[in-house]
Length: 112
Length: 108
Image (cartoon, rainbow over all chains, first blue to last red; front, side, top):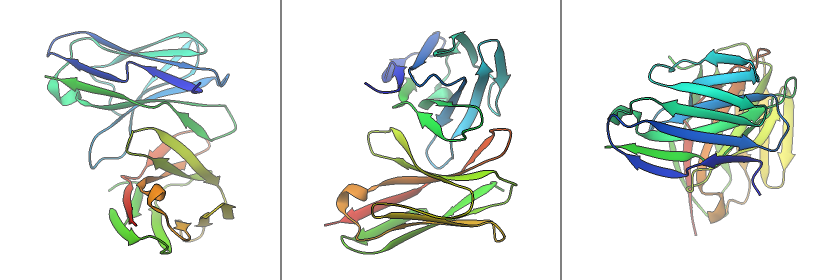
């Protein structure tokens, strides 16, 4: 089983719909991240959390919200999806002081 | 200007060739990472290094701190090495800066 699991892996939705992407990890890491990847651009940080009660905005947080339900779970929500949120989304984890990041398999979201 | 720049953007090689992917960064870092992304989309960490050189199988990563430059080398390339290779820099605050990736295709 994967250490970092994302669901769903693929989703097609319509403009205006609410979407939630979920991430769970078995690494025991305290730090979790949500990134989006677009063709020709590097991974861009949406939100990150260093602990259950810690939520921080990344460089492109507008239109997104997150919830850290437990140390192992970090969800990303699009309250009202729009077409330019079509992208590949990655969840990642790391442990404080260790530096190395572990990624999920990605969730491909298409907003029509 | 991106904090992390990679070159080339695209690379096609014949099986068996020696491959080099370059990465330059402009930020202060605590570590430099090389990641691999296969066509299925998943991203795997290959190396994390803060100085010198690391080797894993046919892959070698080097870093020159003074020149703010890192290279990823693949010896005896194979079609299964075809993937996107991403360079990333991290600082002591665990903030990551990602390059846009190098798409490698190895032809049999």
